[in-house]
Length: 180
Image 1 (cartoon, rainbow, N blue to C red):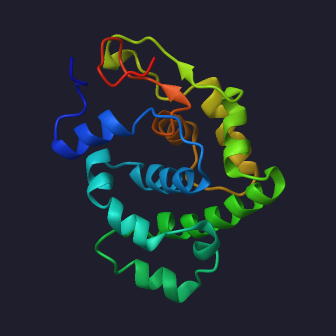
Image 2: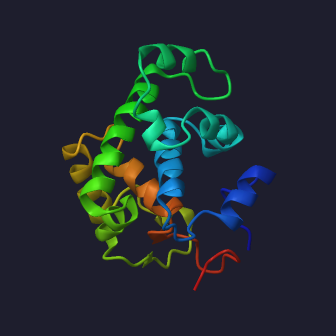
């Protein structure tokens, strides 16, 4: 059974190889945080097609945190990313908040996985319409991230991040990519 939302080659590859696989490296968690924030209001396919542009534009939080107005303006002309001022500016402020979390907890990984007690939440949904848009955990994550200065981290974006980062396994029952 192929996942119903993964219909194009780029989506199938993302679904089968990445989505729902537990991530524990700060660099990859940063990438997914950036991608999920930019995805708000857009399709995943659009974001994945521009993934290389995002990687180049927002490589590491330490570098992004130093971006000034000139760099932001340059990014707003970069066709390889989504050119949304609020999202670009929030990514710069999120980089600063990300670094503060790393300093406080030793790693972003240690901080973010506390919302699932260090384990993947394994759901057993059989149909796409059963998947929630948010959860208690994503609401708690959103509240804490916002308190720490993060932006574009509402409960729905946090739930999507949790799915992408493998904190939640929402592969449907019967899906070949479902990890036991």
